[in-house]
Image (cartoon, rainbow, N blue to C red; front, side):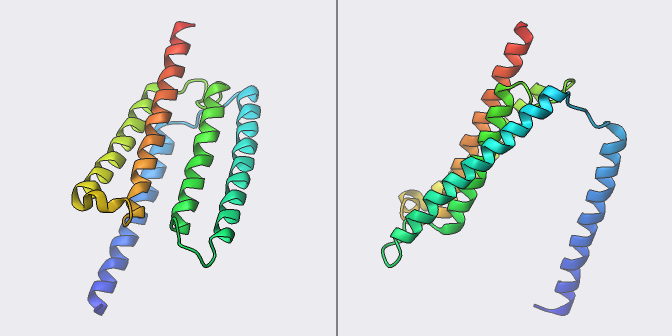
Length: 173
């Protein structure tokens, strides 16, 4: 890599950091921080504890599975197992928070969460379908990294459905 391309990469990264900083300041001034009431904070704390213990249990099973397969055939990439654990932890936290009416602030916008999760899930499915179209059935044995897009897409659609159910339930009340 030449010196000019390294400098240009560094400049692009610095420009992105500066833009993100300005964007964060603009968003903070434009949209004030929404507060949660005490009941929501307590429920979110229980959700964090539940997701923590879920991840501990998951990683214990992963560690035991990896110990058993030492010297044997590898079933999945270790980084893929870590990403699945992170997604599982996030799904447990958001599911508990939504069921406890603590996922959004008092003046939160659940439809925004529904559409943003649908958008992210659609992007994940498009990326997975691109990999599927490119490799076909070879993904089953070869492209373990492509499966994370499918798993993340399912997770985002699950969260969108939960937020939609919450929105419809709150509207009925």
